[in-house]
Length: 291
Image (cartoon, rainbow, N blue to C red; front, top):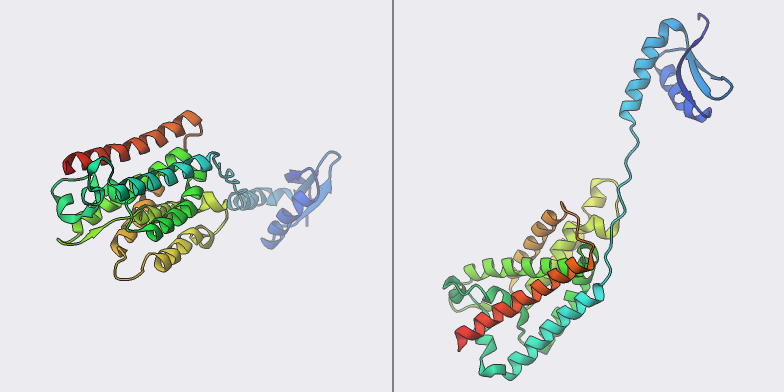
């Protein structure tokens, strides 16, 4: 072989040259590593320099360093959002049990398909806050907090619960349009499964970043298992509502994932107040119609 004299790569240490040396040798290009005072270099024969540079360029293009994804930003204030959720459900439970304002809260707010199709849109929101009994309320409080708190950590306590309420409302509205005459539904479980859908769509933000499709699908698979386990109860369970809630949460989570969640306290507070105002407006419309 002719004298090796042309430098085709340099690195601050020999290790930075060793792998590239193997690449060149695998292609039949004679090369060696030499220490040139301040750095290490790969040297090849002049007639092989062009081929060596081409091979090294190809190798570099195929082995670009992976960009490390930014760590997920988790928001504070989850307790405040959780307290708001509990307060809303408990307040409506107390009001409906005692018939506050002399109104039949169940008749005014339950998800009745015939009434929804008659443009009583507010029932899609009011039904989320009504429960058949104490056990029903306790279950939705427990599971709502279980899924809602992680959502509020990812999206913020205001936007998180606003997203849960919005997905639950959309799912209830669709469910109400399909409910046959004589059937009705109530309960926060549709919103609970919307929270589960939001978590499934934002699984990487909750679990952190990882490589591989299997890792990225872990949140969705886990959520589907929970949906099957928790969302299909007895004959009185609104399976369609649960499934619609999950799908609505999944879709809304995918949309929200394209935009950074607002980090400021004022913005999160505004979302929380708007969510509460939406439920108050829905109940005002419901009770006004009932009167």
